[in-house]
Image 1 (cartoon, chains in turn orange, red):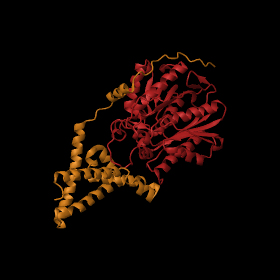
Image 2: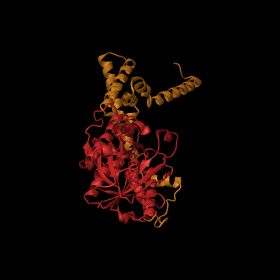
Image 3: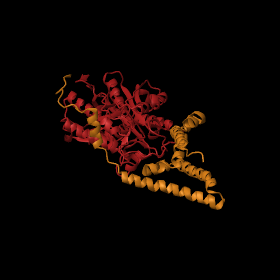
Image 4: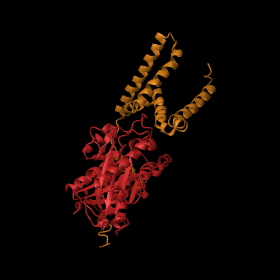
Length: 163
Length: 338
């Protein structure tokens, strides 16, 4: 049995720097249609908001609430709908089609919490559900609070806040 | 015996006397459905957690492989296996039930051929007569560990790949009827700086090219010596890049059929919305090889093939810290037995 390697160094090694290869690979990625994605996001995001508006009007009409009073129960209904759709395994499929359209409204926030809670139920209620529920939503809360703080300071300086 | 720089030549010709592939529902909808030993209709497989379901895939693959090989479980001497989860728990827990001396290995999606090469090495060196090589992966455990919760709504880019739910096992023996493992090339880590975990095909393609070149140089073979050279899970973008890189390097890859398991397992038209660029995961190359390709060798449709399983050796921690993705590929040459 021979151990000799036949024709060593017969083929050229890939002579590309990391930068060149990244560009090479990027050129071969399928292009993503920004127009189509924006349109889908607009349709689904707008559709979710339209449903929310209908729910709010319903509370105002049937329960004689003011617009402000109807706000909280409307959000609760939208969250409930998102959670039900997440549990039925529909929301993630909608999101693949809709992109930002289903991620930006409050339903997207509900989905991020519900999906994490479902996924980590197997690790128990406290360490699993409790510990992981804010895995994705936590950063939204942190940066939302930080952003609100800075907006508050701007209002204070300009004297436009606190009415 | 070492041949060239990184190729093991198996002069005692270890034989794959039996193999099995178990898959989940999405693979069952694909074009290779009839090749698999068992198709689970549900992703949870009536288990309490995704991790338990993944473990079940490995155990069932091992059981079916033992049955297909026509041997008794007691004849097996070692189990070489791995998976994608942290601390390779699926394989280790399956090994607990198998009750065999166990070597756990990790090479991400290249674990399938890494374990097969090691099993062949054990048998070839007369360190064992019957060795089980097996891997498993589950779409939901991989999503949970590497990406987002399974039900989280986020849009995947067209370069993303879909982890195959499945388990594949092969039994390598010193003698018997079946396809022969003639040699294996162990790959080196290649990292050309891709950092996007949703573009693993592009990250892994150079590793596949490097291993194919090394294999051809070490063995003195050319692509024409193979009826099929198949990569593990480069998917559509990675496969195209690998083809171009091979041509640029002067490897006449056009002389053979050059395929990719990640493109074979799903119907790339009907399941496009689900799988994006194609399949991935260590079960991808395992179920396609053990379920489909070995059958083609047994039937004589293929005389000799090279399976180049590719792996992206990243962790959720490493890419969040901005590290690029180190990749590897292991090649195993399998041919028809006499």
